[in-house]
Length: 113
Image (cartoon, rainbow, N blue to C red; front, top):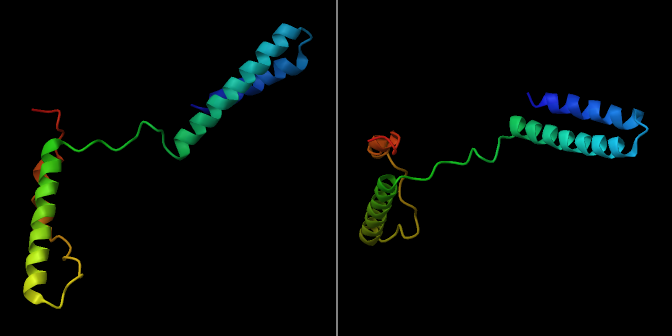
């Protein structure tokens, strides 16, 4: 319904053009500007997304699980690099389906008990 701000801005601009009183001219010009800015903000939020749609922060248990998974990958990578000898600098393999499903218990809402 952000388009209503455009209609209000056009109406205020029409009042600005037709009035002969200086105070009403200034107030309607300011109202037209405010409504136009609100319309642009609504259009931006509808097309791009609003600022309040930020990603949710990680729950401490999720963060701890990610740290442990990272440490385990680092341990296996350094262990396999040392034993292989020729694979130094090769990144570890991508996580498998088993490791990805292991983090499934953390998909629930952390605010719920």
